[in-house]
Image (cartoon, rainbow, N blue to C red; front, side, top):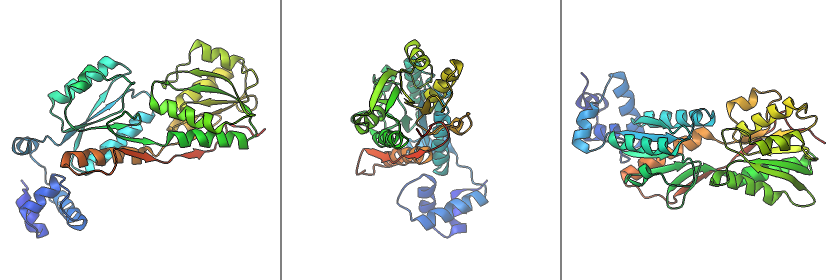
Length: 324
C-alpha cells in the first residue's frame, strides 16, 4: 500500500510537503502541488480518511444543499461543485431539499451528523430553517444572496438589463412579465434589472410571479391565453419560459410569430425546445468552482477581500424572439 513517504521519495520533497498538498493546504507552490498529485495518482495512493479525521478533526467532506434537482440548472451546478471539490481531494455529500423547508432543515441535520467540514447552500426562500440555525461551520451561499454570508452568484441586474435592451432592439414595446418568486433576491434582481432599463414609452402590460419550478399559476395561464397586446413574454427562468411556450401553443398562439418569449439561465433544454429559447447564460461551472474555492479559503482561515463573488452573464440569441 502506497504511503505519503513513498510519494515524498518519488517527488523528492519532504513528507510534510506531501501532507500539505494532500490535505489541501495553500502553503505549497503550484508546480510542486501538481507533481505531488501526479505521482500520487501514478502510485495509486488512497488516503485513509478515517485516520486523517482522527488526527486533524477534519473529514474532508463538504455538504451541498440544493432546492430542487428536477430543475436542470441545479444538477449542472452540482456537477461543477463536485468536480472542483474532487480535484481538491474533497468528498461532496449532496442534499436535495425537494422544494421543502423540512427537507432543507433535515438535510442540514444529516450533514452535521456526518461531521462535514463546511456547507455550500442554495436556499429555498428568505426564511432560515431551524436546522440551518444550528450550523456553526463555514457556509457559502450560491445563487441566492443573504446579508452576512459569503455568496457566489451571477449578475442578475445585468441580465435583466440585457433582456430589456435586446427587446427594444427587436422592436418590442409592450411586454408581459412572468417573474420568479419575489421573496428570492435572485428573482427580484432579475426583474429590477429589466424594469429599470425598460423605460417609457415602452410598457409592461401585465405581470405575474410564479415559482422557479415552471408551474404556472391560473392567473399566469389566463394572461398567456389573452396577452392583451404584449408581443413579448419575459420569464424569470428557462423552466418558466418553456412552460409559457407550451401554454401559448395549447391556446393557438405561435412562438415567435404571435408572441415572443425569453428565459434566464440557459439550461441545456433551452437549445432543445422548438423554437429554441433566447435566454441569459450564467457561467454555472465558474460559479460552482468559485463556491468551493471560497469554502476552502474559509476552512483554511484565509482572509477574503469580499464576501460576494459576482459573475457577468451574456445574452444567448436563438429563435424564440421575433424582430417586429
